[in-house]
Every structure is written in structure tokens, then in C-alpha cells.
Length: 163
Length: 322
Image (cartoon, rainbow over all chains, first blue to last red; front, side):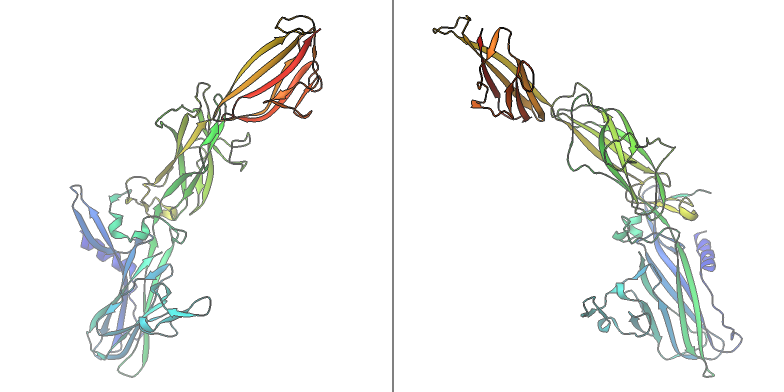
């Protein structure tokens, strides 16, 4: 019952993006889904932690964003880069970005420039420069290395907290 | 359909969700995440895909009530319409309406029971009861507050005439959300603003605070005595004898008697002895004491403001028997 509900929710929430070039070989299908942890306490006090779709979220909640990709068709694609601006009202959770075979960098300027966390800098109001904090991050980028073969699929992810 | 599901927020949320802050995203807000992918296909074309997902921000129901008077509100026994000032603040992330109730709290030690208590809006904005303040009636004019908004409310009570000096009287004002209440984490499906789920926050959807009155009274014990000195010595009250009146005011209690004035008529068939008025052994100035000026035919001494803790005040004056 629960799994059915989740499946329905995903279908409702997620934008499956189909390219106008869908009929041609080798295109990348993309899907974005949000999840949150939900702890249910039974009448006997037993706790269950479930990962449920983040369809309704309370301030302060950490949302797990997953971006799924799949190579459709019979030709490979290359030079794939996934970019995701941190949603409005949300703050990136330090160290949460992940993804197989991906070089992960971040932007603090709305996606104009990207760097690893140790090299990201922002200006203080007084003009001095400091290392960027997770709250400064505006965008996450995953550069997928190599060639993505037909049928290849994967997920990149990050967590963000609803302010 | 109204579903109630009990969940543990502590596990879902970070500590930041325990109480709403000014920056809390408003209930009903749609948050959208749009990811994009750029890639090169086998024909060498660069293509872009986007995919988005969105969620709606739920309503976190929280309210606080804080007593605003900085110290116990001083009252006197038998006084009416004494004010305790409270502030009710919607600390949730969406507009909510609150039911208000006041309740007696019995403190330890010497206490009194505030009576005829009513809740008023601070319409006049003075922080104390004014005749133009609007009476609160539960279910009729429950205050509606937007996110982070607050309103000052007054609990107005009478003090019984039997209340003793230093006695405490305590009243608690409680605000209860009309959107959702219950244990922390209770979900009230669809009950929030714009039909979003309302979730009971750390306050349980209700907040309360206790305000304190303290009785401060002053009592004045007044005694008068007279000594007679005859012209040839002795103390017979004969013509020409001098009578010295000694008036003593002994204050007690924790309040002050303000603008205290002692008036004592000079008896018939006597003549006031000019310059004889003494206050605590010292001659008085005309501004402090006089005969037949402030009050015709009487000695008047202005003691001013006298604290309950002050020492006894002694007024003396003399007359001669005609």
C-alpha cells in the first residue's frame, strides 16, 4: 500500500522531461524528485523511519533532492553536465552532494562560476574575502566523466534544508 | 477527509524546526527545484534537458504568550480593574487565529484571588486598562495574527478588599491555536492556510504566561497627646497655662502615603502660640506648616510623601489657655 502511494506521488511530483529529439538515438532523460524522512510512531511506541516524497514540507526539514538520469536510445552521449540551482527558501547542507562518476563543484554567484568548496570565496560587506559557507551556495553542478553508454542510468543528489 | 497522524518531528526536522523564526518560509509557499542537464549526443549536437519537482510548505503551528510587566504589578486592596499586560505572538509560519483564556494560578505564600477578571484588547495602546479598550469574547473576536505578528492583551481584575499587604495574585493567559492543537507533530490535514496541512509545533499549538499582582498598602497609626504647663509651674489647666500638643504618625506597610497632610483645629478658648510648630523637633517653614492660613482655625502640617518604611513623624505645637 505504501509503495503504491509513493509511486503515485512520484508520478505526480516529478517532471519527466522528454526532449523534442526523443525519437533520435542517444538522449538523456532527466527526473527530479524530492524526499524527506518521516518517522512514524505506532500505538505501541515502535518507531519507523521512512523515506517519503517531499510533497508537503515543514520549515526546518531537510529535503533529499535526487536527480535521476538515463540514456535512452542506442547511441552514447558525452560531456554530460547536470546543474541544479538550490531552490529558493532552501539552504544547501554541507557535504551532502554526491553522485557516481561525477566531479562536483558549487557556485556562489548564481551559476556563473564553479569551484570546489575549499576554493569558493565570497566577499564580506567590508570588502574582505572569506571561504564560502553552505548558506552562500547558489548552485550545485555535477560533471559526469566519460561516455554514457546506451541504457546507462544514475543519480546525483544533494540535501537542502527548508528555511 | 481529516487525517491525524502522529509523527516525531524531532527525527524529521533539524533542531531549527523546533520553533519558527522570522526567516521561516511561509506556509503555502511552493518551492520548486529545476535541474538541468547539458550533454553532447553522438551526432555532436549539444542538447539540454530540464526536470523539475516542487513541494508545498506546510503550516507549523506555534504561539507564545509572554507577560510584559517588568515586575509584579502593584495594587491596593479593594482596587478595581487592575491590569496585567501580555503579548500573544504567532510564532508559526502562517496566519492563525487564537482563542484566549485566563485562569487563576495560586502562588505559594500569602496570596489573594483576583476577581471579576476579563480579557481586553489593548485598544488604547496604553498597556493598562482604559475605558475604550475592547472586551475580548471567546469565539467572537478571537485575534487573528499573521506570521510573526503579535498583539498586546490585558487581563483586568479586581482586588478583594481583604487582600493583605505583600499578598500575591496570579493570573495566567493562554492562547490556543484554532488551526491545530495537540501533541508536538500532530498533523491536521488541510487545516492550514491555503489548505495545506497544519502541523503542531513545539508549543503544542498553545502558549501561556503568568502575570503577577502584588498588594502594596500603607497604614498610618495616629496618636495625639497633650501636656499642660501652668504659669507658676505644675500642670493645672488654668488661664494662661500652655498646652503642648504632640501628634505622632507612624506609617507601616510596603506602599507610600502620598501628599499626606495633618490638620488639627486649635481648641476653643485657646490662642495659638506663634512659631511653635515643630516637625520632628525642628521649626517648620511656612510652606510646610502654618496656623490659620491653609485651614482656618487649625494647624496644618504637610508631610508630603511618606513611605511605609519611614520612621514616625512627630508634630508639636503649643496654645495658651485664654
